[in-house]
Amino acid sequence: MNCQKTARLHKLFWLCAIFLALLIAVPGCNGRPGRSQNPAKKPQALPAKPEADGTDSSRKKEKAQKRSAVPGAGIVTGLVVNVRARPTSQSERVTQVVYNDPVKILETAGDWLRVRVPDGYEGWVERQRVRPVVPDQGNGSAGQTARVIVAARTASLFGEPASSGEPLLQVVMGTGLPVLGERPGWYRVRLADGGTAWMAARSVKKYDPGEPGQADGQDKITGQQVVRHALQLLGIPYLWGGRTPRGIDCSGLTYLALLVEGIRIPRDAEEQFQAGRKVSREELAPGDLVFFDTTGEGVSHVGIYAGGGRFIEASQGQKAVVITSLQDPYYRKRYLGARRYH
Picture 1 (tube, rainbow, N blue to C red):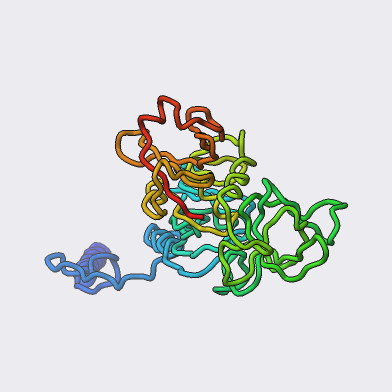
Picture 2: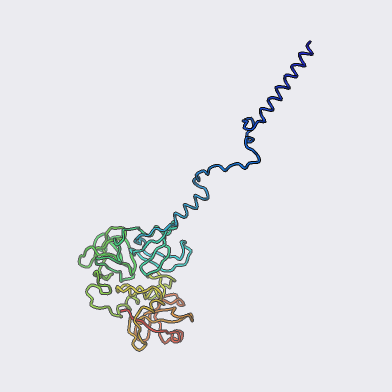
């Protein structure tokens, strides 16, 4: 009897086991995750999830946004700022801008801005050296107000019309600032950040609006004035792409000497040669620009004729601004001609 009961129990156990196994094998069963799909059918792709912050795609989008075009106007707040060929401080210096120069902002790339500067160049400057502004406001190189241009190597700006005390800033030759008021021997000017300061009249030249090239109290520019500005820079070190008393190249020297007289000329020697009025060697007068071919490929060097058969140049060979004779054997056979702007 007990044996029969045991046999029936075993039989019942195995029937339950077989039934349970069949139940688990049915498609759609939740007993074994991952087996509910037909293996012969390719699973459908799940809907794409939004990209999380920090993914490669989001970083690429962020980088692209940082380098997107953002046209606008800006004012240079650095005293002397290098303009680079690419957005890195190791890139070639193509030119320079100075305090309060207006620039057109063309593009951004991280901490850099691609800008067009007053001398016509386009290049990259550090973002922190430029303040975005409303167009036609707050710059010293354009507008309908009188302005001053620094004619000395450097000029100090003070909080009051007196040279005692610590200056607020010391700007370099060629810096232009709008005039807001005057006192005997002093001009009150607007700064790049919108503030005001005073500077001594002896260190600047004042120009009235609509009269480029004619300083206050002067009827006409003379070549001798251009020469005087250049002579102040004797001994200044040669610097490729430089155009200030901190360092200057050949076309930067000619550009700066004429800029102080209110005359804005092209930045490159080749373009300066094309734009000026042609002057024969017999007609040379102080202030004329003299051009040379030092590479065998056309205009590559320029200087300012000083009279007496001499010219002032920023010499790469001598690494400074010097006076040289037109009869120097090297230059005599490389002379191309002269141009007049004054």
